[in-house]
Image (cartoon, rainbow, N blue to C red; front, top):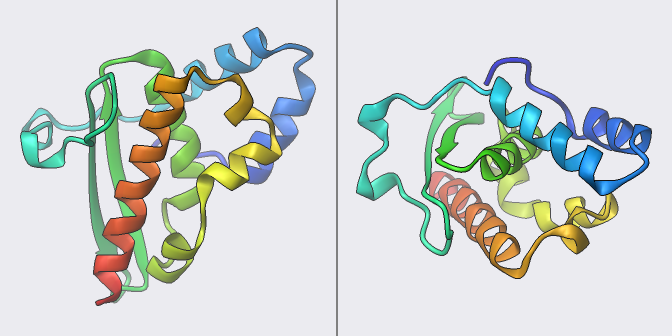
Length: 140
């Protein structure tokens, strides 16, 4: 991901905005800054089930299997922005950290969970479950 952001930066930036329209615009901008996923990775086996939009996620281990890298994309701008937020939490972290970290709880700290539609929230949960499952499998 280009211009990757940390969760601390995300939290700080959220505090700069007075309303959720501005925060969602910021999230969409984060998604627009992400590198696109190569089309050959946008295949059925990489799709995340439970999302209204199309979402693809791939993962790989790097640095002697000590960290995980993710590549993800969506056909919806806001979802791609949510992916960017998840990458701030998970990309480049150890499989054990990822398996043990619930991004939904992290996002609740900034109030994001309360401002998503039920369908978007379900899709976000599906993406988190997929990422954490990949991390758990990497631990075995």
